[in-house]
Image (tube, rainbow, N blue to C red):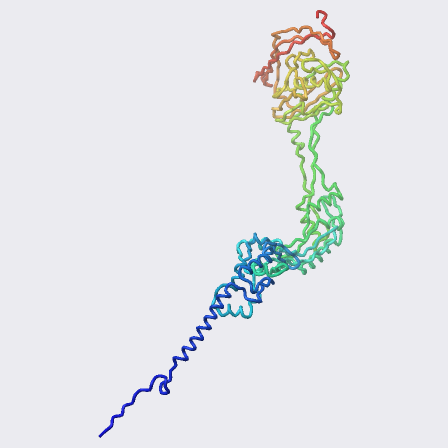
Length: 578
């Protein structure tokens, strides 16, 4: 008989089936406990700056974020608004942080080490401290670049090429000096990074700017300049020559760089011309215009004379050749002939060869001041030459009549009253000259007869004159030839003659007097009364007729009408019938 044996499984946890649940739960409990502590610590420290933390040298560790921001604002807030100094070498400039778009970000600075985070690095900082914090900033790159560029322009130093100058004619070398140019992109980066991180100026990077004319060029040019000024320079102009010492011509020299940067000798030709003329003014001569003068009572042509000049262009080239290595120290210049503006041929072509017209009026010889005025005015117009188209303006020729010009007080008509004034009598010069122009057939532009008729003048053909207010006598030479005015006074006559080439025969026709009016009688008992005779007033026509020289036939005519005023007889004293 057999026996069945039954084997039962061992209970859980027994030696036959060891359990792992218990240890796992224990570890899990520990982890959860530690994690809870870590999370709680992270939460508790979220608003706290790690201890042993500084920003801009200010201890902010252990403070809340709000407290840290407030402390930094109090300590460094004003600093962010102060000008930012920048430098290149020993040169310093400033940048306005507001204009440059630089702003301080204190909240961002503190936020970089605060706030809830499970990052172990953040927690580690709370254990060992965050140390030194960089202050955060906001930067407007465009504004910063613009301000740095402006500062760079002020800090840049241009390169100074070497040179040779000639103070007082002595060649003197000028050493070359390299320049500098601020590296703007690098300068922008430097300011962005360091404007709050340094107590001194922010050093800006700069590049060296090389010179074009270096020391070797200067040395070579100095030797050339010394040779050029070693001896005198002789300037030869035509048949004249003048020597200039180095002290005289040296200041006109210069060393100018050519396209290769090599200094070459140059000369200020205008300055050299001035120096040469100062030493010998006769190197140049002004031309003399021809003239037509009255000699022995008739016109004569005085020949013009050529002048000569020292041409600037030729002088400069000749001087450089003379002063060069192969030069003989003699600058030979062909003088330039300067023709007179009015040549002998011009004068002869004017055809001033005969009397065109002449006119004479008489004057009282018992009035010396008036005669003097006639002589002064006649001398002023005598010899006047009018080319075709020229206008003769008597007031312009005589100018204001003053005692300084030799005029004296004599009788004049002022506001219808006979009185005295400086220059009295010049109306007779005007009248005589007008009649010469009248019979020469010239174009009369302006004339005015006297208000009262004066018997020594031709009726209707007379011309009064006053400077201020202006009453003038003007005519134009409308012929194709010249007119030379001759005027003279003597023996009770004043005569004005026009010389030229006769163009017309001119007649004058005067109408009979009409609208005749007699003056009355006026009594004047004032202290400054001047008695005068009565004047008869009337109206008259004057006609000028131009006739052809050969045929005598009338070509044209012109009529002027004038109304003379009547004038009362003035008796000094009271009216007997009053």
